[in-house]
Length: 93
Image (cartoon, rainbow, N blue to C red; front, side, top):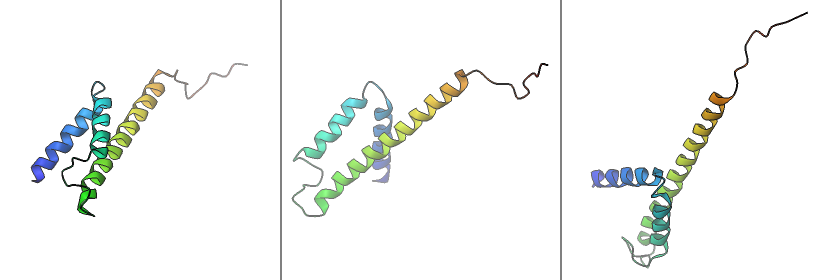
């Protein structure tokens, strides 16, 4: 069971980070949340909301992780493309 959950998580993460499939996966996740067809039906008081909560948590965690990684990558690109200032500026009199 743990192996199945890990493989799903890895697949979800890789697919969400792939630009071609990102919006399709986000749309499918949101469709799953509003769909009456679930792994555990929503009419069961607490158990019905657990799978929805897990899917929302996974989506939010992965989107925030992707956004942070993307911002760090852009920051690194800006730092490497900026002209370097020398530590000892020449002083002319």
